[in-house]
Image (cartoon, rainbow, N blue to C red; front, side, top):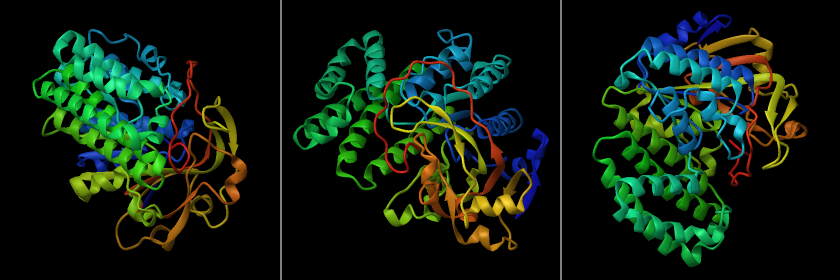
Length: 418
């Protein structure tokens, strides 16, 4: 194991040497609201794009919202001239995950970097998630209305299946034993029509296909959510990995992608207690599909600090105090052993027991109650198997959300809001 103290961006050199040949680099976060994670992830991502030729960034966010950012950072004719304007249009709660000053700074850099290059060499910004059912449906209507009015009927039939449930599509899952068979057929028909269009070239056609995949994934997700168990989580992460693979195919045989998502998605589930619960994630799926050597998984962690999160689902975000990590956790051990900031690169025969043994590892979602620290918010983990590298910040500060209107989000699965 190699430990490198972090101070300047150049201190990422040993990590960059470790991951530069990977096809996929997944960079995590142990919260969705820590400035330090976003800032360090941005520094590493800039170098991966500028020095190693990575093709795109794909985040744990909605496809339609992120597509507006993509059009801005690639300087598309219909894109916003300032990426922050696109980020300010994020409406689904929790908006602060991506509509924040830290992502805006990265997106502004990416646009400036892209405009100096031919269109085919510009790095993209995309969303992987499954929640944007209504937004994706509207995007399909807009596309088909211009490109293929004859296919509008398929979209309208699919829309009518969900329409009785309004924006609370989780209620669709509760009624799925009565309606899901017909809805599933309509969604599959819509997906087939848009996939057929996407076989020919054009970014709008690919985006329409992806929006149809979101509708199909959301239908499966909400139907599974009501039944409980790991199925809805697994459907969501499989959808995100499928989207990543479609992007790699779309960008070409030499394409390479960077993923930004929570540790709980990025770190290989097989090295945690998630596996015993029947759960998978994108880190595991990427290794299984592309091979360990082609995938680099990078986690984050901290001992204490402040974080932006919400006390309840759908409530406004707050800056909260994250108490010191509990006794026996990975974070407590790293607080005792590591510099204030460091990167750990795993491998070799000299790894200490706290890297190879199962130890509690903190995970904070968008919903957070610091009083639960004594018994919740931790995932038993074999750190050196879950990640290829780990970025340590002893003390963190809260990120800076953009002032955007927030609307309630759909329910998520354990751990809360990751």
